[in-house]
Structure formats: structure tokens, C-alpha cells
Length: 66
Image (cartoon, rainbow, N blue to C red):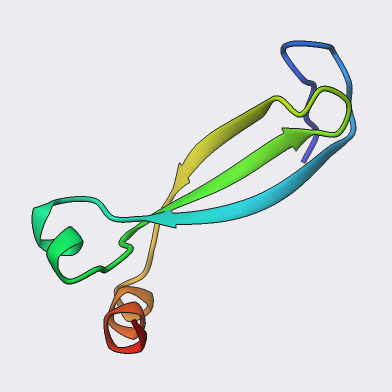
């Protein structure tokens, strides 16, 4: 992946992942069914999040391992 920071034009970055709840039922049962990839600039620490798809099996696994 090639990334250029929109704030400082730096091209070095770290990639991470974050999960979050999506709606009322997922909040009640504490199921993180939303998945995001983060890209953080190593120079200025500006971070962008991009939504990615989750699989049904990962949602089920998350439900039973909370």
C-alpha cells in the first residue's frame, strides 16, 4: 500500500486495526461487528480510519469470547 499523509506529505506510516459496536443490539451484547483499518503517519501522527468488512464467523467468535 502506498500512502501519503494529507497533512505533512510524509510517506512513512503504521497500519492498525480497530473494532467497534455498530447498533443497539450489538451494544447490548457487546459485539464488535464493525471493523476499521487505521493508517497513522509516523511524522505527525495524523490518523485516518477506513471501514473494512467483517465475516460472520468473527462476529460469532467475538460474541462467545467477550
